[in-house]
Length: 58
Image (cartoon, rainbow, N blue to C red; front, side, top):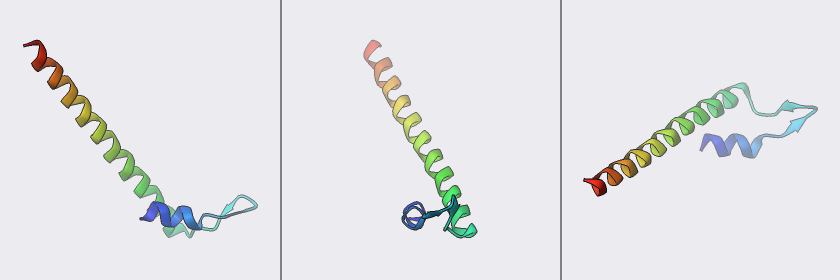
C-alpha cells in the first residue's frame, strides 16, 4: 500500500520529490520488505525444485 501511495503522489518539480520525508522513509522500508520477501520466495521455489530433482534421481 505504501509503495502505490507514494508512487501515485510522486511528482517531480525541478527534481524535487513531492513525497513527504515520512512517506519516503515508508516507501524505502516497504521496498526493502518487498525485496526481502521476493528473495525468500525465489529461494523457496529454488529449494523446492532442487528437492524434486533429487527425488527423481533417487
